[in-house]
Image 1 (cartoon, rainbow over the protein chains, first blue to last red):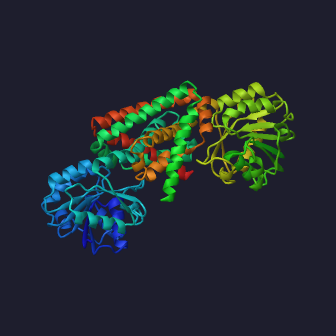
Image 2 (image 1 turned 30 degrees about the vertical axis):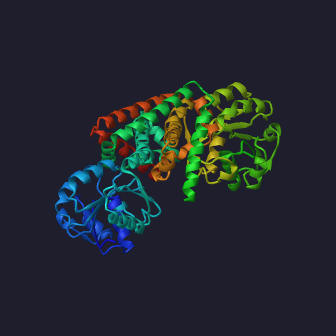
Image 3 (image 1 turned 180 degrees about the horizontal axis):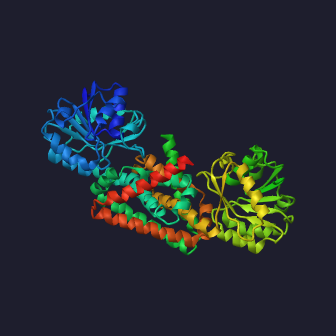
Length: 288
Length: 288
């Protein structure tokens, strides 16, 4: 499959990939690089990588797979920096939550001798950094791959096989289709959570009310603890799709508000609809 | 404290109270009543009550504590029905999520010989019904009591002691203050979750997108599985406060939408604010 894998960006996802690949003994060597001071040494100490190298060119030279696991905002510059250093035949993949923009950059910047396969593991934690890394993070998760018509079939096959050694399940999607679906099930939930926290916890009653907040608030607000930089980059690179979802969400809330203000007993129908949809999703998930 | 406790409504909360009281051997006898066919017999079988009686008058007669654990929409009629059957000196409490309206009904309907102490345990599950009941449900949770100036001090003391035997921590609040704070930390999160599910899971992409929904969607949507009738009643009895919170929430989302549409890099500040507030709340909760 691959002998030498270079991971650029040793945060939660990059670190977890290193751990998972090393635990599965799926590749001969994992090289890591991170801009943060001491991060790559720490990643080596916790077993996420075999070697920490200190320049991008050293890191990618001789690697037959390069995994870019930085926030999406850093991807464009990174592609520019590594483009001239990659050995012909190298496969490059990423883990960013938005794919159309990343693929556009890759097609524009990488040489034709190199294959790019966009990737996105549907997993995470509200914690970030290599200390939160976990070799089991990808077990049973869906891992989207978004090859295009010009992507080399061999590269697709090899990246798919690698994803499966992480314990994840591959799902192929067109980039724009991916971006729209992920905006609904992942980016929008983050924004609903951020708005909830900024609404309730900025209120003058919060000092007291915080004591009453229980498991419902805990779950509805959990995503708001996610990495601000990562989500900013997601919003900047998937802006149109996300604002479309926000418009529908705000319209749904406005209808709900009207029902509540007019003490409309049909409110229960709205709540039954949500309950049924949620229970169906949960049941289908338990099955799979 | 109390010898004979009558619980009206044997759902998640009523059933869990019965289990907790019986497990703690805190009272001599727990009598249960539920309108649902076979529910009280089932509650007896799972150990939530000692006896199931089939009329309200039998249930409350001779009880020195009556706990109304029905959806708030049923409380008014129930108070009317039991008002003439209560032994003088009986204490009545409830567990509804809105307090000002319930207290108004109690003051209007109950005889002066009976004390009413409004209560609200800050706990729950997305499941409902006596099968989801759990004697440990109240362990370490905050349990609001909302006595008024006219509430008998002895009744307050005895209900507080009972709450502590459930393993919960008493918090006294004025009814309106309670309703405003709980609307923010509990009712609003439910509505954000309902709107999320009704937005995303009604979309034409849902068949595919449902497969990509992971832990973030799971948590942000969990509350939407809650009882539609219970939440309808909450919205109908706390309508003004809830619409006030919804207005602030929609305004917060509208600002976020504008920032995303204009690709405003200050988005990260908005996300940092939410992250900090969420982490602070979580840390203070772990400490307590």
